[in-house]
Length: 246
Ligand SMILES: NC(=O)c1ccc[n+]([C@@H]2O[C@H](COP(=O)([O-])OP(=O)(O)OC[C@H]3O[C@@H](n4cnc5c(N)ncnc54)[C@H](O)[C@@H]3O)[C@@H](O)[C@H]2O)c1
Image (cartoon, rainbow, N blue to C red):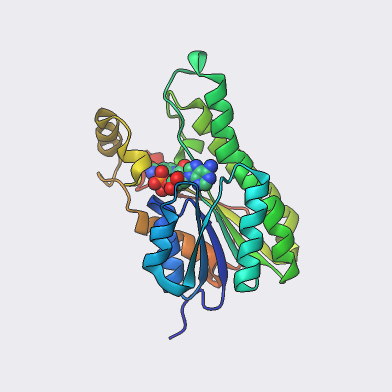
């Protein structure tokens, strides 16, 4: 049986760990050719484990030259660019807004916001060449509710959601769909590196009383990337076990 992404070419950033790794694996299983991008080096092992359908690529997604090179590599190696998951991000340090370090703020904005802009800026022209595509940006429930001490992170994810909407409207009649999803707490390094007390509080406050799994995120990314969601664009889908519904 043909996979749900048979014949598609996907770039997934932040694919060295967590959600990006799960998304890359799921996309490969559904027949896509995947460029697994990360800055960490971990993408090499991810690609090795996934076999011929997956190529590793090292890039800093906050840098224009790196983003252009990663997108060109996907097109040149696999023949097109059909799916782009702008997923890489950092959380930045914890501090109250009145004390937040300026350089740390700029770094979070570069990795989390500039990267998504660059991905769309240089990915859209490549998608237009082949008649369309699907862009899936990773935002966060930090765009929906407050997370004290994370002003840069929350602001960055608000920007991702707003850019998603704007770009989606611009390209809706040209075959490119652009959506984002906003995860709640998911069991990846970004969450498990938080203080234990913080983790416990978040789980206790979540109606489902657990954190999400990266594979549950990959299921949603697959739906948004695939032709099963052809009437969905400009949307933010919250995937949080009910956390923001309370
Ligand atoms: N884990 C959560 O609870 C949670 C909740 C909401 C949203 N998110 C979002 O989900 C996405 C994936 O995060 P995750 O939870 O899998 O965390 P993670 O830390 O496991 O993965 C993030 C990956 O991005 C990579 N990365 C960081 N900076 C980069 C750069 N400049 N260039 C290229 N790659 C870079 C890291 O090396 C890492 O592999 C992020 O956008 C994050 O903000 C996470």
